[in-house]
Image (cartoon, rainbow, N blue to C red; front, side, top):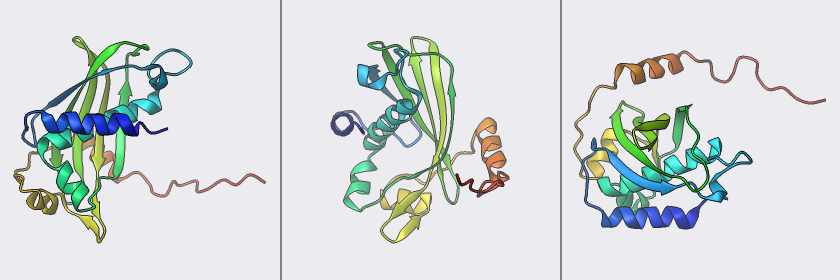
Length: 182
């Protein structure tokens, strides 16, 4: 089940934190609760995506964009993600999530997130998200202007740009097509 109460709590806490710029790094602190973990007593890999999402909600709140998005029916569907899972985070352990907006292009925004314990990176995520509203898609520039935020853009780091380039040549739909059980 989606952690709705936790999401609202993160958003409310984010509203009480100092504002940050679009390209500033947001740091949030968490604990691996039993309902986040799997049979092996570590954060479940699927749940990790939700935990990263909660940190993005808080970051977006601190930037000053979430209130506008909710008020105007704007949402940010994930359009692609690449995750490196490197170290386990056991039940009850504390960790932090670092979230930073990297860049945007004509269709997507790009976000980098990582989970840390001390100086050890436990996992790392690169995500792209579209921006939608009731009328359809919005460009990142349209959203930033609507939110009254800077439209300054930065080039993606080389490693992130190579991911974008590789994904652009990936076939869609998958080449093999659907397989039906008979």
